[in-house]
Length: 294
Ligand SMILES: C[S@@+](CC[C@H](N)C(=O)[O-])C[C@H]1O[C@@H](n2cnc3c(N)ncnc32)[C@H](O)[C@@H]1O
Image: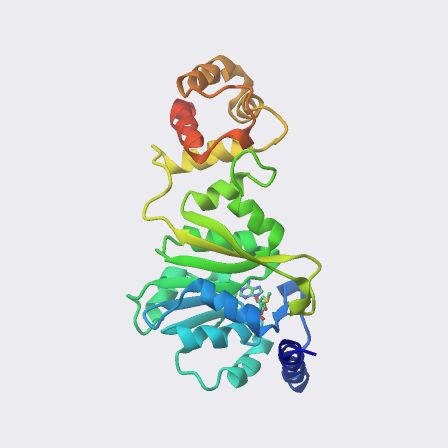
């Protein structure tokens, strides 16, 4: 047995001991899969490139395994945890730290802009680092992005399949509206893949760490942002259909000739599929179709 094996097993034993002493029951509905592997925890923290000049928001600290690493490296950590039965555990595991704030709440119901004012130094850059609850990965990312807080970056663990979709490039099966919704604001890349065996209990999917760095300004300039997202989503509704078919379904068959004329203006073929269009193409498309907005 190597030293790494011994470390791994002793961490699992320590985690199980805390859970047993607190009579903790895992709640599947909250997506509770706790990390036990210190190599992975340390790799996540390194990927986030923290310093004492950075504040961190963590979503779902669980029993505080990742939180301890973040607290060592960051100025301050504010964590949002929905499960109140984890509060006494976190009070124990994070007792040595005075740079930790726990908010017992559903992250999706939090006014993030108001919450970040409670950092001791709210002017420091903020990074989001978390092992996300997988059942609400996309709503959480959208909630963070739509808060309009200028987060410096997100380093978050999620289901590998979702990470691949977010980081996907055009002409791939994984590329779609989620890739564009995120990449419009952030540069996304899969940092590393995480095996199921490092969690208690083991999830039934593979996981990946996705790093998303905020762009100074959105990737493309559009005349009307809400319209850009609407036309983009409409284009992907039926992936196997052509762009023209999707646009007609969204904006009316009676507008066929008009849509064709706008596509021609944008130099986009009506018979192409949405997955072949880059984000810049979608920007051109949305601007050209703008007269169709009621
Ligand atoms: C995958 S676990 C990660 C736990 C811990 N960070 C770790 O890596 O071991 C997800 C955590 O998110 C919490 N959670 C689930 N839904 C939540 C929500 N809507 N708001 C805040 N926390 C939530 C769960 O209770 C759980 O602690």
